[in-house]
Image (cartoon, rainbow, N blue to C red):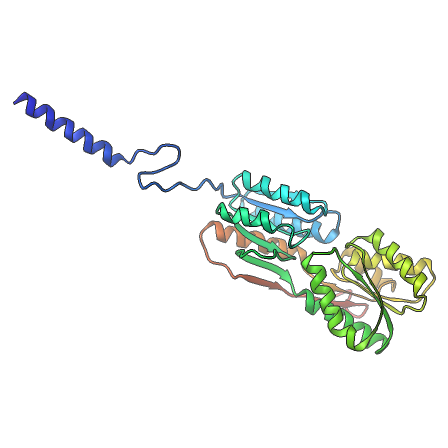
Amino acid sequence: MKKLISIFLCLVMMFSFAGCGIVIDGEGGSGTKQSSASGSIGLSVSTQNNPFFVTLVEGAQKAADEAGVSLTVVDAGDDATKQVSDIEDLVSKNISVLIVNPVDSDAVTGAVEAAVAKGVKVISVDRVVNGVDIDCQIASDNVAGAELATQYIVDTLGEGVKTAELIGTSGASAAIDRSQGFHNIADEKLDIVASQTANFDRTEGMSVMENMLQGNGDIQAVFAANDEMALGAVEAVTGAKKDVLVVGFDATDDAIEAIREGRMGATIAQQPDLIGSTAVENAIKLIKGETIPKEIPVEVTLITKDNVDE
């Protein structure tokens, strides 16, 4: 009898251990690996040497602070190689959501694919990520904004005027889209005499514009794909003592002041703070398991001397 009781107790203990589902190294009885995501958000921004992206980061940080979530911001310094490394580093820290503003929409593809493969949710802001199915894209309508800016040149100076284009960083989707919007109008209504990249940079914008004016002294208008390049063009135009209508994109504080003073004709107002905060708000929804739209457009507006104080 004692032997039977001992066997019975052993069987009970065996079944009890089986029911416990002992977890070893993060694996449960079902064999499914548990998620190590931290519930935090990483933001990889192309550069903070640009007021637009400084404001975008500020909007994102404010939204994160208000929601009480962790946001880590890394600045690529307009270096696509560094941005890839930044993204890999953020993913290694087990972020739940990556918000990325690409330096180059193609160059980040591999790093973003790797992040997605590890279960990280991805939101792009201002510029797209090419070749990857991400969770959401939040951006201004860059094509429509450039069309507005170019039509302003036509409405102000008439058709056929000699016009130059300052293009943004090669490979950046915003640069591509804004150039497309410019050409949608300019190819039919303006005489494009020069078109060159100045990498979204004020100093380069000034240098490129100086060279353009030396080669085409009768340029009457300039469309610059961002305000930094536009303000550089303004300096070049002022230095050459020329009367040239300069139109930019972003509505930075310096550009708004230049419009008030009559040194710039117009700019396209985006809402970088809203882009940043919207990205964080939707990142939090993803962390909670909620569904968000694949695309969230942010409205743009033409700013001229007539509405600059509104």
